[in-house]
Amino acid sequence: MAAGSFALVLHGHVPYVLKHGRWPHGEQWLYEAAAETWLPLLEVLDACHQAGATANLTLGLTPILLEQLAHPAFKEGLPLWLAEREQRAHADERSFQEWGDAHLAFLARRQADRFMDLAERFEAIDRDLPGAFAALWRAGEVELISSGATHGYQPLLLHDASCRAQIRQGLRSSERILGQRPRGFWLPECAYRPAGSWTPPAVHGDARLRQGTDRLLADEGVAYTFVDAHLFRGLRSEGLLGPEGFRKVGWDQAGWDTERAWRSVLEPHLASSEGSPRGVSVFARHPEVSEQVWSGQVGYPADGRYLEFHKKHGDNGLRYWKVTSARAGLGDKDRYHPDDIPGAVYSHAQHFCAVVRSILKRHRAETGRHGVVVAPFDAELFGHWWHEGPLFLRDVLLTLHADPEVEVTTAGAFLDDHPADKVAWLPEGSWGEGGDHRVWFNDGQRWMWEVLYRAEDRFGALCLAQPWRDDPALRRLLEDAGRELLLLQASDWPFVVHTQGAPDYGIKRFTQHATRFDRICDMVVDVGEGRTLAPYQEAILAEARACDDVFPDVDLALWHDP
Image (tube, rainbow, N blue to C red; front, side, top):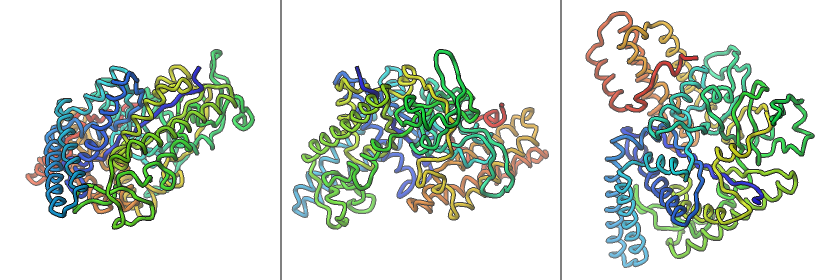
């Protein structure tokens, strides 16, 4: 009998960059993710299948990522980008040969072959990455989950209507593109809020009641989601679920009822702000397991044998050097040696699997219960940030599949067999620095939330004031404004400003969507008062519809249906 289960959860997300710049910030983010993470992940899943192992991977593809991967512009652009990368590798090979450096020339030729292989794989799936993953979902190899439409940061959105619209449009896009509606939902930045009184941190100073994330998800039929471990440490007990139904318990029971494994990150809890059996099942990220990969000090990607991410040959160039050591400057990096990689990947995969196994066995011994180690990661870590990451995933999945003590499962399948039996109130928080909202809201981004809150207010007021239900032109304009509002709400813009990863691009994109939103709202007022749009307004509208042509099924009911 297995000691417990293991659920690998990958969260795939790229903000809306299609038609919005190329390099250093823009479409290249999307092309790199496809070439370094998504196509290699298909190879991993195929390797598992060929070995007779079901990967049972829980895979999140955010709706805005799906919209881009399914877009004709991406399907045409990726082969051109791969061809350009292949040509660059060949040019590097010639340069290295002129230098007399045979090893670097070998690495360049190897990269050229890889880009050619990726291009052939993309053609083999008819340039349809979402379709390829959807087919694996139908075949039972993976379970796909959804997320907020544009990765809006739920706890800080001003109105519940905005939270609902992000969730509803996200589920709608996932179902339209993937062919079925996901049961699971990735909360952007794993950010959760309970129901209760809240005072907006900008613009408005009045306290207001708001619904909890648990209720917002449950109302849309979402079965489960994920949070960081510290939210479990701060939960309070509300009730128990069993064959006899729901039984209310005291808030302190989580502190003394050790046999029930309250607050254990190895068991899902039903999150309910209302203290009732109505809520959403929540899995917590296991910190010890996640640290094996995430930690900058002890994480596997820091091993000196792996490819160095930051050193490239020329502007927008390719990588030919290895990490070497954490203390080595970019000028001191040694050449990459592919023959070193299989051994490194194997040893790290075996260590990871041993950590998972020992945690599950300890939980079984201490509680007598079947636990689950949940390991959620940003998907782009594997392949993009950590070049050898897909090989690591392959070895981990194959190793655990052959381990009789560990059951590899998806989050949804685990819940089917082991439904949550504890109802809990969860505190507010995220998986960001400090476990709170400081990465996305601080003095450096306050102005962004002031703009966003005023946009939410204006959109709501226009929808109430304008007769859009009886006027198709008004309705379409308001839907255009709603699309820009969704794009404005992306958590990526304050994130890249705070981290300084791409502050100029984040500010540019945020202000661009804010400006388009306001101008379209001005058009709504003009049309509502019987005026014809001026030629310059028609040009602005045409540009918005051409550049931001995602969510074709956006509907005002997303915000206004109860």
